[in-house]
Amino acid sequence: MTFLKSLAQIALGAFLLSAGISHLDSNRTEFLAQVPTWLPLDADFVVITSGLVEIALGILLIASTFIFTKYRKWVGLSVAIFFIIIFPGNINQYVNQIDAFGLDTDTKRLIRLFFQPPLVIWALWSTNVIRLTKKSIKG
Image 1 (tube, rainbow, N blue to C red):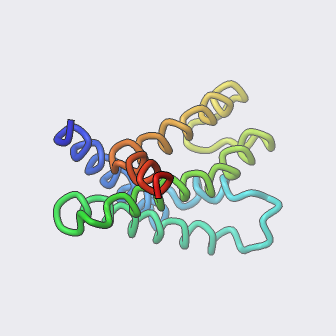
Image 2: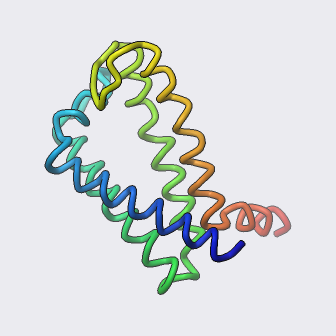
């Protein structure tokens, strides 16, 4: 199970690293469409900042698999929180019927909303955050 979790953690790190890089280049316009319209920040700033955060989290996920293993759970928790924080962007895309990333129908945008919880679970499971929580509860 440890090998499988490590592999899942590396895969999630690679996914975040790739997505973060695409925030800064190839998919910048697509990501602009996901910035909530009610957010009182410049949309381009949000896309660039979230891209840099994704790059950092991706690197940390990969690194904490091999090197900084004692921080693995904290990195996983940070990734899960990040996925929750960016979820309003997906809701915004659905509510405002914004086409981006091939999500050009309400049905596709609605289905996309259901992909966020598995990402949160993936981050928590692959980095053993559940154990961290149980340990914290026991005191």
